[in-house]
Length: 115
Image (cartoon, rainbow, N blue to C red; front, side, top):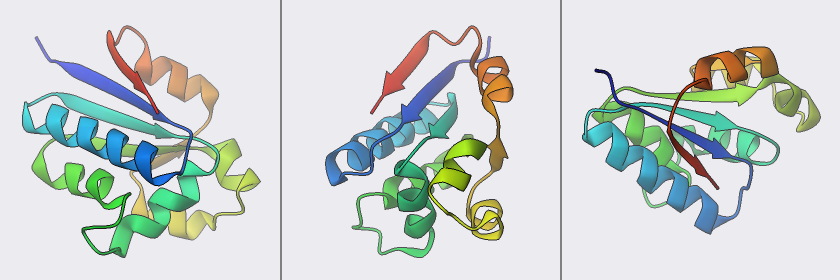
């Protein structure tokens, strides 16, 4: 049976970014399929962390994609609200989707974390 973890990240402070990144790294390293859903100010913070120094708070989220199956997914409304270029979001994230897709993709996942 496939193990899955879902992380909902809606804050962009260093603590929330590091906690979400640590959770994503740990779950991906354990072989879980990890989906990190980004909302509000977390979207531009994670997009900016794409090419950031590995010590930056959001860098661990990008690193999680290299250690296992981890997807970074932005809420389309947050991309618009936060004025993130769609081209930048599509270049640095795995998907930009609306709420119906978020609800469908996260349905039934028991391991959920909120930061």
